[in-house]
Every structure is written in C-alpha cells, then in structure tokens.
Length: 314
Length: 314
Image (cartoon, rainbow over all chains, first blue to last red; front, side, top):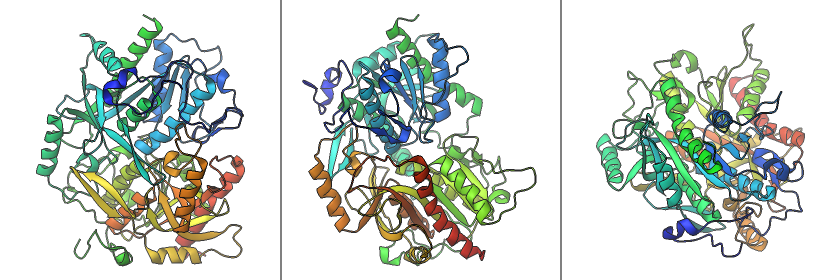
C-alpha cells in the first residue's frame, strides 16, 4: 500500500486512488486464514472468491434489493451479456437475508439497505471480498433515491460533495472511545464525466450538487409528517431554504459514508440519485408506482452508459 | 396528550407511559388527510387501518425479514391462533421491499433492517399506523442478535439501559440545525418481569445488562476483522474490558434508538437480544447455521412467554 494515504484533504481527492489489486487498510486480515463475510454468507474458505470475483471492475450499490436485482437484469441487456443456456441470474448472498448480490460479468449489483450503518456493513464486506478475490482497478457507484431541493422531481443529481445533517463534510466513526472523522470526498473527474454523459435526448435532467446525508428520514430531513415533530412548517422551510442556498440539491441517507469510505479506501466513486419529490413543495411521496419505477431507472441509465463507455461497448 | 411529557429523566421511566388510544407527538398529522406510510406501502386512504390493526397490543421488531416471518409463525403456534381455512400468513408490507410486516391476532412482527436509521424509519411509520388504527395500550419489543461481552454465546441479554459507542445514554438527532438528545431509557418493571420469567428448565441463560449500540459493526464495535482497522488487538481488548467493567453485557446497532423513541412516545418496551459470540474471545461469527438458528429463537421464547402471560394463555 506504498504511497497510498487514506486521509487526504478534499483537493487531493482525484489523485488519492488505489492502483492494481485491491488493498484493504487492515494488517490483521490474513488471506491464509478463514475470513467469514457474515452478512453475505460467503467466506474465503467456503467459496473460491478469486474464481468468482477476480474480474469485477464496477460495484453498484443501491438501497432496495428488488431494485438492485432489476439493475442486474438491465445490465445483462446493456452489456449484451450472454447467460449460459439453462442458467439465470441468482442472488449470490442468498445464504443470508440481509443483502442481495448479483454479478453480470465485470459488474456487481449490491443492495445496502437504508442508512449509514447498514451501508457500512456491506461496504466492509464487499471491500474484503474484492481483496480476497484479487480484483483490481475497481470503481464504486451508489445509485439511489433521494428527496430533491428546488429541482423537478425525477431529476438525477450527481453528488459533488456529501455533507451531514448539520452540513459537516465528514463522517464520524466512534472508534474505541474516539470520534474519528473521515472526509466525504468524491472524485471530481468521474463527476464531470458522468454529468457530461447526459444527452439532449435524455427525457430527464442530470445536474450536479451537494448532497445532504442524514441519519433520520423524518426529523433529520425536516419532515412535518413523522410520528414526532416539534417544529413548525416555517422552521422547516427556513432550514431547507438555507441549505438550498448553500448548494444542497438533494437529501438521502448513505452518501456521507459511501464517499468517506471510498475516499479512505482510495476507490474511484460517484453517487447518482434520482429525486422523488421536491422537499420545498412537500414531504409525502405519493407519486404513482409506475412513474416512480421509471424515475428509479434513471441513475441506472447514467451508470450503465458510463460503464459501457469504459468497456468500449457502443 | 394531557399529562404526557415526552422528555423525562431516567428515574421517571416507569410512569412516563401512554394510556388509551395511541397518540403521536406531531400536531401536523390530520387523520382526515391522506398519510402515506411510504416504506411499508400502506396509507390511511388506500387501506382501512382501523379494521386491520385496531386490535394490536404487542409489536415485535427484529432486524432480519426471514427471522420476523419465523417469529410470526411461532406466534401462531404459541397463541394457538386459528388461521382461516385456505389462508396463510402474508407480508402486509409486500408493496415495498424495505421491511416485512406480519400480523397474528394482537401481535405484529416487523423487520427493521440494520442500524439506527433503518429502525428509525419503520418506528415512525408503525407509530403512525397504530395512531390511525386507534390501537391502545400497545407494547413494543426488540428481539435481536448481538455480540456478547464476557457471557456464554447463546445467552439472552435483556437491556437495562442503552448507551452509544462512547457510553452516552442518549440518542442524538440532528434536527433543523440542532443536535437534540433523547434519553435511551427502558421500562424497569417490564425488564424485571422478563428476567423473572426465565425458568430453571430453560436450556439457556437470561441475564440483564447494559447494551452498547453502535453506528458501525466493525470499527464501531472494535472489531479487528473489518476492511479498515488502524488499532491493535491490545487497544481493542482494553476498550472492551473497560466497557465490560462498566456493565456492558452486549453490543448491537439499534437499542439506543428503540429505547429513546419508545421512551419519547411513552410506550412500554424492552430489548431482548441473544449473543452470537463472546467479543472478549474473538470477532468472527463462525458458529454453524443450525446452532445459530436455535440461539436466535431464544429471545422469541422469552417474549412469547411474556405475551401469553399478559393474554392469560397458559
């Protein structure tokens, strides 16, 4: 891991990247001993992880298991990936019911559940999986849903920088009695490439912006429709307008950890979320199911286009 | 909500309870308007929540969807609940893939995923569901898994008090730019009744203790087997021994929010978790699947016994 420093200032984001086989920042992991990836029911003893995963180049994370299954099926079409006769995609993590994991050639499609702690668990285990597999030059994407701020519902927001619920650009991890901070920095070159890949033919807008990541969906995002609420609509609106003025375009619950851990691990990454509503207009998500489904496919389209361009598939 | 104050000191925990129909602490929720419970795909317009849920008296939460399905099936037997001919239990939240929700007479069995943010979402929505349903005198339980500290794996720990990763007995919620603190207090009478309900015939131990609740499974719990680890085994052991000496018997990822929100809402509750390993001995969970399955049924046995005693079923 020579020359690879996990804690860097934001301006160094672009150069802070792993090259070659996946490294992990833990000298305790001995590849010759069993390492159980408990929450995906795999281990380097029970499975030949090298044989299964060495060719992985892109890992796409999203909250919902069924959406990540759909993304895998979408990638089969996009990559014109040929399934073996008599075989179909299956959830590789089926031995556990915590996450799903699908593989389509060089692409892994993984669910992460809701919130930072849930993402954090699968992030650790996917990183170790790729380390045991000896995969190299892997990129990570989060393709998710979010609430928008002052943007048309259905817009795709690509994250410039993730901030927490009080606008701090780092994630805190309570570690053996210390509160350690990891900057939530994303690769600015990948961001630019992704934004530039949107075309006038797209039937939706793709923009860049700051993403607020909260630990709570209701009060943490200033909603008026939770089971607890001790503030007024005017308080909510004042807060949302203030964060909008500071560049926040959408709010979700995982980008801070995703950005911080990718940066820490030196992995090129991006966060691409569709907005399901404009929080300046309301809180409830009541859009019909079929429209929502179409919206949720939009980040998938952007990422599939990027992956195909990197693989030279036209 | 007269006489019902959500923020009380720990010593008041026992008396701070709702009586009568479920109340929520949000004057914005108007029962005459549509309220979409987005993550469980129900609403007070699309469903007759009163008809479906008014008789609920016990809500049992647990992380894993398949475990909560098994718990519902277990309660069918325990309550000698008669399913209608030609019918079987189904996941009431099947319109979404975020959580599962089963109902067996007065008992709801709900999955909450992993970590505080995931629990927080379903907690808000279940509270609103019970409010719309007009349910009354409802108790909440979390039946989960955890890492133990200095106790035999397979032991059931009933939580006296939940603390965060640096031993603070409250949950913080970033709310419109403020960091608000909610004490994670649990009902001491329910705790005593649950501990007393264990019998010499039980093939496992049931003890009481402090529960540490972290936002991270690997570094947050001092594990040496994550993808990131920048401390030594001696640092980990020193930390775990220090928290053990201060009464922490197990570590998991939801109790802080569960206790804080139940206390805030004035709901009688308890946290009952089995320990899957002794963290003073190691980090990896490598116990055979069938043994783990049996261990995971233990908190269910304790809670089923309690529910049956309250319902007068012998």
